[in-house]
Amino acid sequence: MFIYSLPLFFSEIGLASPLELLIILLALFVVLTISSPFSGEKLSSKLTLNNYLFGAWSGNVALSWVFWPFFLLLNISLHVADTLAKMGSLTVSSWDDVHLMFLLPIVWWTIAIWRCSAHTYLRAWAGCARLVTMAVFFDYGLKLLIRIDHPRVFFGCEELLLDYGSCF
Image 1 (cartoon, one colour):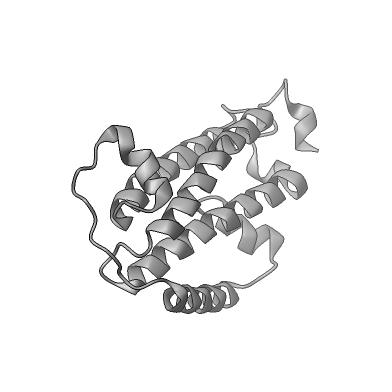
Image 2: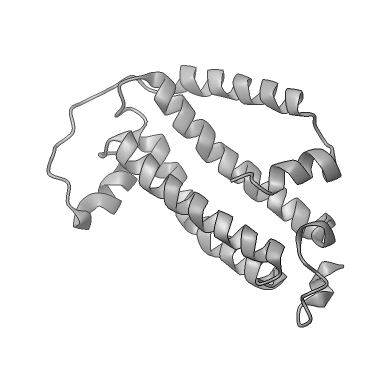
């Protein structure tokens, strides 16, 4: 997340400075930490792979078990897709398809994070997890803005013969 999009946001787009974005980030963290629920009931320790997805969706899984696996998988996948697009190995429309393919699991992950926020020891961890899920949507918005307004800056348009029209 943000490896290629945030530097372009500050250098090419210039809608906000790093200090302004940091202030917004800290304010959102405070609001999300205050609004996160207190630790509730005890969880059952009988978690299998078959009921993991439903348990996470319904809010019956520890927050760390919902947050970390998907966070790592998502970041690795997005980094690989962005790196391939920067190298010119992935066309613009294929890059769109990869991000569209991850959109539904990101929505599932966001809802699961919100529902499992009560199952952590500190409310600050719940606020941090919620902030990261909101940052994913901000990153998607940045990538959409880059895709629409600044495609020649991000994509290797000189090497894309079949999808060259997408760079304008």
